[in-house]
Length: 178
View 1 (tube, rainbow, N blue to C red):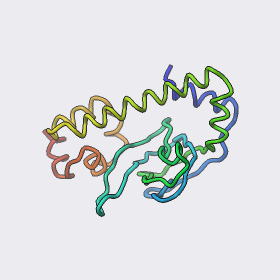
View 2 (cartoon, rainbow, N blue to C red):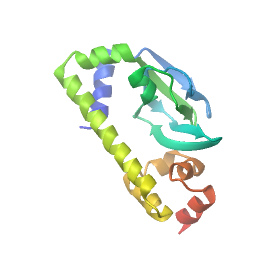
View 3 (cartoon, rainbow, N blue to C red):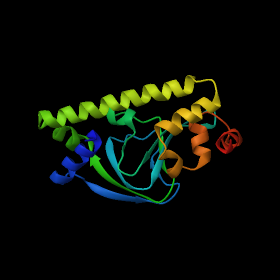
View 4 (tube, rainbow, N blue to C red):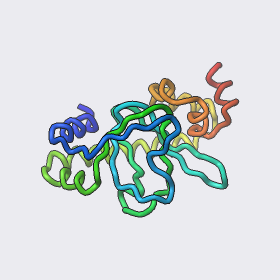
């Protein structure tokens, strides 16, 4: 079983969620400069995680239904985040405070093991992302991501996928058509 699904099932069984937030398209869940130590479970919708450098947005991650999402830097170090998390369409998330979450993780070796598996998956995904960035050919980047995350192309507008792939929307469109 997928460790994220296992974790969510356990959190639901314990009824640990603090609240539910509904967001409209383009609403922000988190903005740069805020401290956000919450963990979010995406019930509906999709999100992009991005940074702004030199007045240019760079999409670095996505989250959609049945995924966990967080401003991971702030979640881990409890300092202001460098990231924005924005709803790409109408979305609903359940919210869990870090303290309550970490108490839950520490409450059993099984919970700790599941959390470690999730973190391992995240590190591997980040390594894949770095490989994507280092791949010179836009076509290769497109094909790698399409193979790895076909759901992305169903959930996320093309301009944000283009940003994630480090290409212009026009290049993305040409590659997608070919």
